[in-house]
Image (tube, rainbow, N blue to C red; front, side):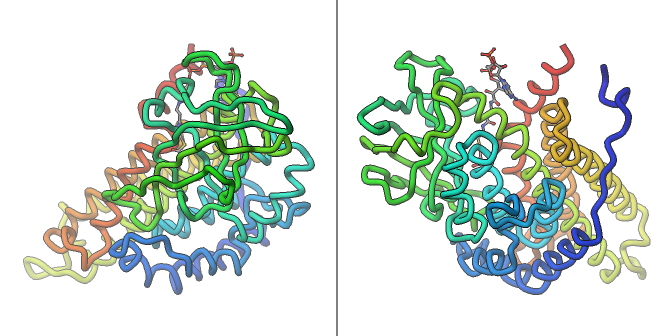
Length: 387
Ligand code: CAA
C-alpha cells in the first residue's frame, strides 16, 4: 500500500519547539554566521561553536529527557540542523553527527550503556562518531574487514576505518566489526563503542577536503583495541542491521544540512540581487535572474516539505521511514547542489571568490550528495521499496 493511502502524517512545531528554533536561529545568525568564512579558511574544527551549542543545550536535542536531553524529537533536531546550516554547514555537522553517532546506542544499546554514556553526549562532554566505512567498504557496507575476536571480558578489535567525521574530536566512536570470522561480505558484524582513550586506537590521518572544511574527516586504526562486553551495542552478529536502522534515521540530518545550505544560498542570492544593479535597475528585476531565484526558492520549499514529512515519520515510527529518509536525503542534497550552483551564477564573478559565501556553500553542498550513503545508494533504497 502506498504511503499516501495511509493518510498524511501530520507535522508541525509546538510553541516550545518554535521558541527553540528561534533560539538556534539567533545563535546561527549572531554567533555562527560571522565565524563561517574563517572556519572554512582555517580548515579547523570550531571548538568555540561546539561550546556554544553545548551551553545552549543544542547538543541535547537528539536525546530523551531521561538522559539529560530535551526530549523534543526528530523534527526538532532536523529544524535545528537546518538553521545552523543556513549559516555554516560545518557547524551544522556537529549536531548531525551527534545524532548519527549516538543513534546506534539510543536504538539498540543496553539500558546500562545508555545510562552510562548518553548523558555525556547530551551535555556536550563527548562528541559522537560513526565508524562504518573502510578503505574497501563504502557503499557496500557489508564488505567490512575490521574484525573483533572474543576474549575474556570483551573483544579485541583490529583494522581501519576511513572517512570518519569527528575523527580526533569525538569522545567515543561507534565501530562496526566482523565478529563471525568469515570473509567479506559476511554481514556477521557487531557494533562496539570504542572510547577515544582506548589503548591501540589512533587517528592515523586527517583528510584535506574540498568543502565542509571545519569538520575533521579521518582514518582510524585499531591495533588490538580491547572493548569490554558492556560496550557492545545490540546483539552480537546484528551489527549490519544496527547500522541500517541508524542510517534510516540519521540521513534526515544530512537532508536537513543540505536544506539549510540551499536556503542560505537562496537568501543570500536574493538579497544580493536586490542591491546589485545592471542595465539601470536591480538585477532581481531582470527575468533571467528572477526565474533563477524563483526556481531556487521553489525547489528548496519542496525539499523542506519532503524532509519534514520524513522526520514526522521518524517521530511516529512509521514503517516506510527508510524510504522517506532516503528520498529526503536524495532530494535535499541534489537541491542544495543545484541551488548553490545557481547562487554562484547570480553573483557572477563575486560568486566565485571567497569574499562572498556562496562558493563555500557550493563546495559544502557537494558532500551532502556523497556521505551517509551516496545518492546512488539512496536510489537503491527507494527503488528496492518499490519492488
Ligand atoms: N533496517 C533493518 N534491516 C535492514 C535494513 C534496514 N533499513 N536494510 C537492510 N536490512 C537487513 C535486510 O533485511 C537483510 O536482513 P537478512 O539478512 O536477515 O535478510 C540484511 O540487512 C542485508 O540486507 P541487504 O541484502 O539489503 O544488504 P545489501 O548488502 O544489499 O546493502 C545497502 C544494502 C542499502 C546498499 C547498504 O549496504 C547501504 O546502506 N550502503 C550504504 C552505506 C552507507 O550509507 N554508508 C555511510 C557511512 S556513514 C557516513 O557517511 C557518516 C559520516 O561520516 C557523516
